[in-house]
Length: 175
Image 1 (cartoon, rainbow, N blue to C red):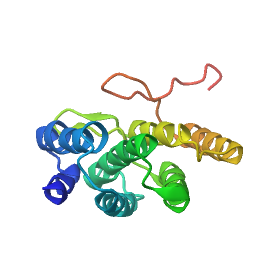
Image 2: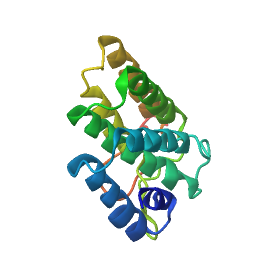
Image 3: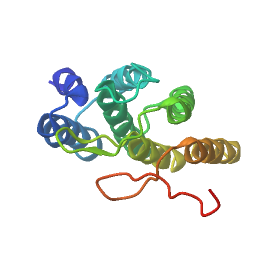
């Protein structure tokens, strides 16, 4: 059933994607501890691969699979804090892939009235926050994360905020 739910992370139906697939996976991973380390590592591998599927596209539905895979990876990183299963190598790979995804994702939409939340940047922020809480997070990692965040903020063509929409930056009074 986990594989079937995982397949719905790319759905354009917000009820199927958010309310069912993500919510159930999050509960099983973080709160109920129902998956083995082997299952968790397999999901990590699948979801990391999803971060690269269609990367560079904008305005397409492929962003849902990437964005919600990042959010599910945040659940895995949170679970790893409670009962480690990633190990040093898995943790480093996940941190590297997360930073790469933050830099490469071009679809920065926050909300679509018909398809719901997209939030690739916010979901990646959740992932990075969970990874930063790990005892494996080192001083050198701080600089890498801050650099990636700085690059994301300076390359974004829109503001990020908590509302269900994004707005264009104001024009400079000198322009």
